Length: 586
Image 1 (tube, helix red, strand yellow):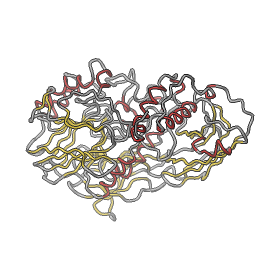
Image 2 (image 1 turned 90 degrees about the vertical axis):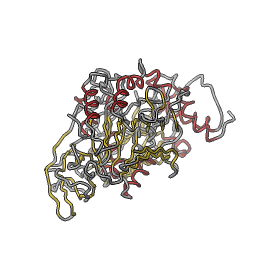
Image 3 (image 1 turned 180 degrees about the vertical axis):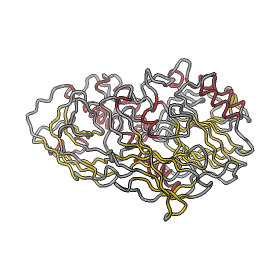
Image 4 (image 1 turned 45 degrees about the horizontal axis):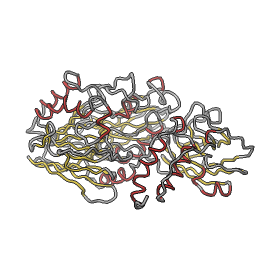
């Protein structure tokens, strides 16, 4: 009490999380929880602190109202890759603050199988004040093309045992075989570029490419997919499952260095995409100036007021800023260091994520590292046995993102881009001394030709250096300590210039550091986990090696590289000012 409105908003989430953590887990995504959370937000933001002794009881009680609901949606045929859906809900009498709207897919026998499906999106009816006042509410949802129909329902009660009062007619996307979610990645060297996209069931898919828009050579695409039986846990196995359709993969080969190419993907029997362009990397050793964008831990943002039941994510401004740089032609490559869709077993989030990044990832190579929310689950191949992946166990990541790895299950690789050699590791798979990954990292770093690539960067998800109390309790011993014990000697031995990480949702930069001591000849570590996930403020303090920290803003990092200098700049999303910078020189 007595703090300013900005700070009240800043700490609202922490206050509510602490209070609501006392509720049963089964209550977490119920309509009652949402109603309570909304009321707490209003109270906290207005400077009122309340100790809750009881919980709104109506969410746990059967709905015995004998009333008529109606629900109307328009349009019922959607044409674009993403489109707004208007929903109107009307009730004769007795609207409750815990009535809610759920978006589901696909319809089952013309209705909603809410016992076996979870909502892709949901929203309290009371978000429109006229619903409680007049019994009629108007809502808008932003839907992406997931290649199958949607259906909308109005409910009351808990999400674990909801009562369905009315369901809409199915809502369809007209063009389910349009090339969707197009994204590029580098191949084994500058002469290869891989493109991935999705459709429902189109045939004779191909990529056509060439140096001029009027002379394109076409090659067939490989069809990939995955099914629910490949998932290893819940909710990915059942309630969160969404059919990914066909995943099409094609690698363009025999490309010239530093050359612009035109390309388009799809099927002439269904539809080809518009022509797009990309530029290949320069040859190794090139002194051509380069700009890379580094982001991490974004999640996806539905661009409407609904909830997904996972967590609040706000990557929209990050993606908008990066897209602006890409459109200006000033970006050569984007690196996303884990924490991609945060689907956690909810398959529709992958479609949302790839739709949101498509304009970026179809123009420049979009390189990634696997993270906890993509890989980890008990009994899986992940080194850490948490449940962050929601039973996905890396399968959607593996099928949808084609990196130049040794094979599909070994999530480490290296790329050479002009004067830079980037080595990407998986912090989610065994990296300890003597492991296959450790041997790969040691050998790859040892073989770097510093005459051609004077700059060497290591990238991964979980950070080796981070100021966080969470890190100190998340594993025994702490993950950052395990990384330092097993991998820091390699960084020192092979003189790695820069190490890039994410996982902790903040921006942090160290001095050049080795074994906890600042040393001018050592590696600079940077955490870029501020892409869009809810920011973490669990700083422990007292870290002499920490030079800069921002735990209150989302943003991104750029690397501007020449053969003689590497400049790292940190930008916040709320303006274009450089808030932190460091320049390394050769």
